[in-house]
Image (cartoon, rainbow, N blue to C red; front, side, top):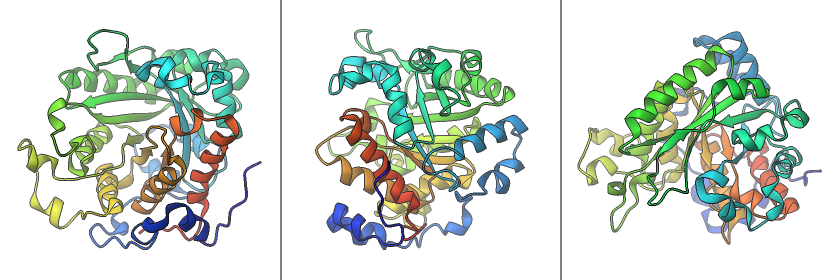
Amino acid sequence: MAKSRPTNNTEWIESIIGKDSESLLNHKCNKIDKNLLSLPGPNFIDNFVKESNRSNVVLRNFQTLFNHGRLKGTGYLSILPVDQGVEHSAGASFAPNPIYFDPENLVQLAINGGCSAVTSTLGMLGAVSRKYAHKIPFIVKLNHNEFLSYPNKYDQIPFASVDQAFNMGAIGVGATIYFGSDESARQIQEVSQMFEYAHSLGLITILWAYLRNSNFKTKTKDYHVSADLTGQANHLASTIEADIVKQKIAETNGGFIDLNFGKTDKGVYSDLTSKNPIDLNRYQVLNCHAGRSGLINSGGPSGNDDYSQAVKTAIINKRSGGMGLITGRKAFQKPMKDGIEILNLVQDIYLNKKVTIA
């Protein structure tokens, strides 16, 4: 049973995030007006997705996603992702809590944690699909960075097919593109074809739209989380018809200018963004076809201040116009009861009526 928190005040939130309360809870977006965006809500499918070229089956599966878990009926999503066993190694991912080497426990965490869906590898979900595919929406991650090659190439390659996901009973598929990498052109073509076929079968599509290039990181800044660069990655994700875009929270800006490549416009920095993380994230939403592709932000690695960081990330996503959070390591690298607690904590931000779109 989820712990009950007030939905009509923010005092409990302020007690968690402390000095950041003012800049996050009271910020007003004066750069990009929220009226320019297709915002999440109970009627998101009827208001926006039904206008697209998506089939009736895609609409049904998308609505199934919105109708599950503690956030059902809100238009927001809370997803448990578990592809880290491939991406970061199983030992690094599950040694902190060895029960999660067994995929059944991960699915149980998603169910007991009130998640909208669980996304994982073909093998993890396939191992328990007959028992759980009808109990919580499955999203199969199709490609991965194979972590065991030495030196590692950081290349996303297909591990599974759309047909395998469909036959498992999944409602959607996910994939990663490392935009900016040497292999990105091939990955864009591969994933675009995957998504086209997935839509033809009625599956929804989620893209991990990540940047990966050693030149994006300087001695002073990491532009892998720059609003202008990640915003362009989001635009490319929407271009290949990702229904949902997964992106890291923007922490800086000016990548195009400081790295002296590509094209941009000074208005991106003067008129459309500020230093406030909500404004930076809103630029990400704007690049998701103005919100027609939903933006979910990643929760990031587990650390010493997981509860505060998770709450801040949820506030930034919701207030910027995002569609939800995908929270993995912060949840499954803890005892299950603590993992459920942090999932519920994130969900309570989206259920709180006082945390509004800025």
